[in-house]
Length: 262
Ligand SMILES: Nc1ncnc2c1ncn2[C@@H]1O[C@H](COP(=O)(O)OP(=O)(O)OP(=O)(O)O)[C@@H](O)[C@H]1O
Ligand SMILES: [Mg+2]
Image (cartoon, rainbow, N blue to C red):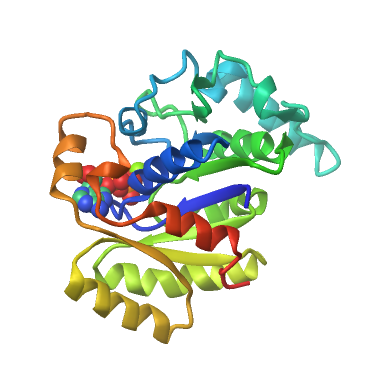
């Protein structure tokens, strides 16, 4: 498994799961890059415990005015014109301007909405896709892509750059309904798909397992509700696998064993 998109409805635990997975991957002696492609939320860096890099990828590439100009050029010159912002690269070649490393764990942000009326987040989608498409990984390297809530990344084609899609399902009817939609979108995109249950207790876990299995969707694992983790996140502290009772290592094993719906 290499490039993974983590998605789900707002507040379901996408950033939390990414943080816990990244820690486990690093513990296994592997390299992992966390790509924050959420244009709004700011908390992932604190969860992971890595300071945000000096620049977002968007700033590194010249900022919105320059990118908007380039995108307009491509649009006006028709489909034969390609947006070539980045060339083929690998994890060890990424500039420290937009990637911060802590050991084998890297953190970067595609771009954030910073100003009132600055325009939509489409340029960030375009550069994010270009970056991921050009990023070549070795066998034991992972990229975990944190997305904004909902299904916008399907509309933008970000999923095309991923090897698999994981949805976080929290105990809510909305999440169960959305799982069916995302399973279908993943199937349309021809990408393996599975879900991770989050913030569950014994009762809600059983209800969710039942509801998700009836939809023939594979469950990669479950993370129980953790009062400690909720508190540590609230005060802006780094999250750690020792704050939960579940084993995120089992989720990784399931992913690596390709127990996903294809
Ligand atoms: N297993 C858990 N136990 C306790 N609290 C949790 C758990 N998972 C997530 N939370 C809490 O739920 C809230 C939302 O989590 P998180 O930010 O990871 O969700 P998200 O899906 O990334 O949200 P957004 O859609 O806003 O990006 C946070 O306050 C987080 O601490
Ligand atoms: Mg988030």
